[in-house]
Length: 140
Image 1 (cartoon, rainbow, N blue to C red):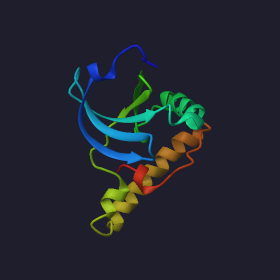
Image 2: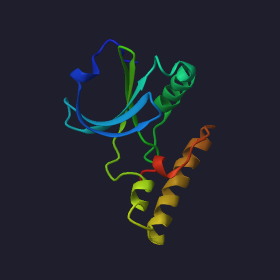
Image 3: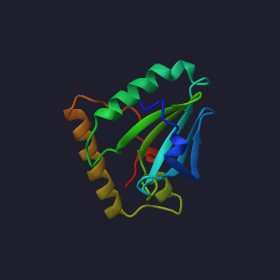
Image 4: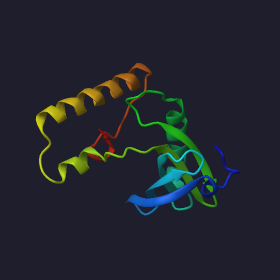
């Protein structure tokens, strides 16, 4: 974890993507060094005391993954009581976003499921299990 670096010296906020519970927010930011967009999960660790061990385990697992079928982890920072988890930004939105205007065509569903199964195959071949597969977490 790159706790001694102020993440705001590296990343510039673009907009809020969403909020989960009362202690986690998702923000899109730009890496000032490269100009690349990233997604940052910001967790208030003071309010997430019960989940800290799970969060540490999540970071450990994310840091081991390297597949085009799994969202890429870029690093973590601690700023005050906020833990910043920096991930690949998926600009197309989630499957839930695709479903808002109506149904998704079957040929799109076929491609999404193929890529999902490739990601699961990668995880399972490394003896890892994803316990929370849902539309909000699938980025076609």
